[in-house]
Every structure is written in C-alpha cells, then in structure tokens.
Length: 322
Ligand SMILES: Cc1cc2nc3c(=O)[nH]c(=O)nc-3n(C[C@H](O)[C@H](O)[C@H](O)COP(=O)(O)O)c2cc1C
Image 1 (cartoon, protein in one colour):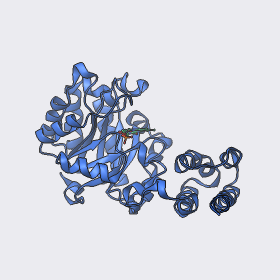
Image 2 (image 1 turned 135 degrees about the vertical axis):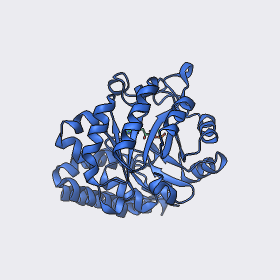
Image 3 (image 1 turned 90 degrees about the horizontal axis):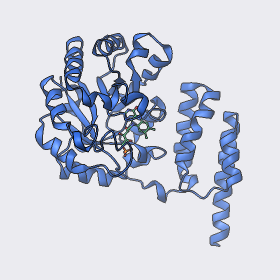
Image 4 (image 1 turned 135 degrees about the horizontal axis):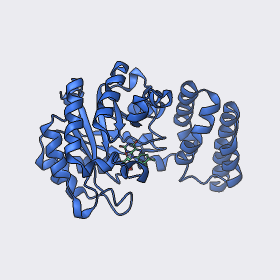
C-alpha cells in the first residue's frame, strides 16, 4: 500500500497541486528540477463519472513525470469510488483525495475542505477506494473548518485506520482561505501523532526553508505551491531572483515548447501568459513590452518578441552599468 512513498528521497520537495498551473508540462519541468513526484490538479469526480472529456484530459501525463498521483474531489462516496474506478486504466501511481480546497463553490457543497466536517463520509470514501485499488491512496487536508473546529487529528486517525498511504496538510483552516500564516506547529503535531508519511504545506519560499522544516518536524517532505509558479529553480539550488531574463530564457522556452506540444500553438500561447507573468514578476520589463508580450497571438511571434526583449534588457543594463 505504501507504493512509491517508500522510495522517495529524504526531504522530498513536491510541486503542490494547483488548478490551472500544475498541468503536465509544468509538472514535468519541475520534476526535472527536483520535485520528487507529480500530482495533478484536482478533478471533479462527478465530471469524471459522467465521462466528460475535459475532466479526463486533466489526467494526461508523461511517463517521465512518474510517480504520478491523480487528485480528485467530490462529496458523494459512491460517485467518488466509481469515478476513480474508471480512471485506473490510465495507470496512475496513486490516488489523492482533495480535502483542502476552500473555494466556496467546492467546500460549501461538501467537497474539498467541506469533507473535514464529515468524518464518517471520509471513512466511507477511503475504505471504498481501498477496496477497488491496491494503489496508495493519500489525502491532502487542512487543519479543520475553522479554529473552533481544528479536527485534523480526528481526521488523520480515520485516514490511518482506513489504510491511507500519506497525508499532506496545508497549515490553515478552510475559513482562513489564504489569509494569515500557515501554522507549522499543527503540521508538526500531526507528524508526531501518525505513522504514515506527512507532507507539510503552506507559505514555503525556498528549498532551504522547506528542508529546515522537514528536518525540524520529522516530515517526509513538503509541498510547495505559489512560490513554485514561474520558479522551477526553487526545486534545485538556483535562486531565481539572482537570474536575469536572459538566464531564465532557456527554461521559459523549454516550458513554452512543452506547452505547444501538449496543447497546440494557439492554446499554449494563451495559457503561457500567466506563467510568463510569474516568471518575470520581479523583473523590470517596460510596460509596453510586457503588454505586447501578453497580447501576442502567435507562438512564433511570442518567442521572437521574448528574445528581443531579453536582448534589449541586457543591452540596457550594460549601458546603465558602463
Ligand atoms: C491557483 C491555485 C490553485 C490550487 N489548486 C489546488 C488543487 O487543485 N488541489 C489542491 O490540493 N490544492 C490546490 N491549491 C492549494 C495549493 O496546493 C497549496 O495547498 C496552497 O497554495 C498552500 O501552499 P503554498 O503556500 O505553498 O502556495 C491551489 C492553490 C492555488 C494558489
């Protein structure tokens, strides 16, 4: 049941699942930089159950991404189990149940973090999943619905009793959303009370910080989300903020090229915009140039403009420092 979790490197850093960002091209890139395994963004089990192609396509992956975990969300144990049964043919290495999403339309309908309020349902889901697959089943949770209901230990006990393979915890409550700070003392508490691998998550800014916390709290690893967007270097040793646009360019181009292969030129050109913004959010790129790049319609045109921008900025810096 432990599956690949037994073979992970010590201090495993993992690209946290993020809808709209952690797609196959970006997971693959981060995996090459050192993310220890891959997790898809969450996919609706009711959409999967209905056989919606747009939902199923979110589980496309490359062999090089393995181990690959499929993350699902839902609020109906029967639908969740039957939906997962259908996607096992896609041959993932693990199944993860999302119990952390705080977005209203998910959590307030009993899915995502909404499941934290229904421990008996959680029991039913995990035991149902364990019956249909021998793959490791994991869960990504928050600390509880709010600070009056911090029930992560109760939930973790149920998960363990049902044979969960690993637990990742974002150190916030559903009510906090993304406000305040992740409470790593609760993550440490969880890790000290369960036997399964625990991955800590929340507000990590660098590999060094993540590794420090992993060691300090005896964790199996850490998930890194927002800070890893536009920053695959984070899984390696480079500090992105010390890299110029020209130095970032080969990685950005590799990412864009992978997206073109995956989505086709038109979709990739539009989808890469949000990544471009993150890749360059700390760089001083003149407004008109940035705007021009973000409205480019053709993939080749985008690359040409990006190279031009990179050379232009390097020349400008040389002139300023001369
Ligand atoms: C845009 C976005 C999309 C997200 N989508 C998912 C998701 O599909 N599944 C999931 O478990 N968490 C999702 N999360 C939560 C992150 O995985 C992570 O738990 C959270 O951002 C805290 O980690 P961080 O402080 O390192 O970003 C998402 C977060 C963001 C910002």
